[in-house]
Amino acid sequence: VSQSTPTSVENSNDRLKFSGSTNSHDSSTDKPNFTRFNDFETMKERHGVYIEKKQWRNLRVGDFVLLKQDDWVPADILLLACDGENNESYVETMALDGETNLKSRQPHLELCKLARSASGLANINAKVTVEDPNIDLYNFEGNLELPGHQKGSMVKYPLGPENVIYRGSIVRNTQNSVGMVIFTGEETKIRMN
Image (cartoon, rainbow, N blue to C red; front, side, top):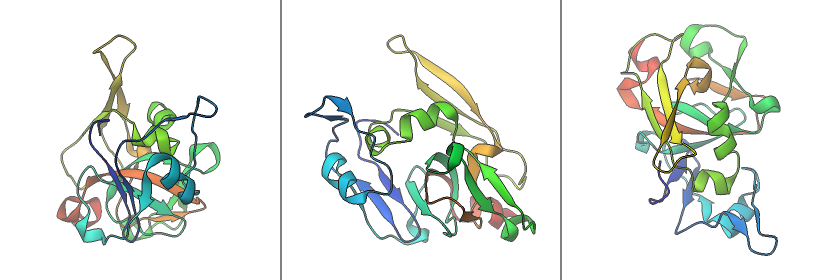
């Protein structure tokens, strides 16, 4: 995801789309905007972000997904931000592993700092590398590269299973979560198992 190209946030039914250039500061206060992912009118006005309906089969790797409470997860996604307590999102994975207990998932701390607001998400600059598709539901390896403090430098952070929500899971006890699609279709864990 880079600053120079518009990005979209998509769900099986909802799509947040970034149009034009976004402004990460409020000119009246000269402070960063921290619009949450539940004030969609403000997101549209301040950041050019709006909801667009889209079917799950049209999702592509790199698309952003907005998930609401009780939504089925339409693809394997890397969690970017959520409004749950302690930045946690709870998911039910019964369709994947038969377990009925809720599992906690969290965005990577460094990524969450950037993506917790609409302005931050619209202006994010990161590189995500993930493992090849496989059938292992309990392990995940990947890394996240973010710009460092020195010009041109990148800092690499590890990603694990606690940062990923798999297709077929259901979001519970979390009003809104935003994630980036990392696998779709036959490459998702549920289709490989």
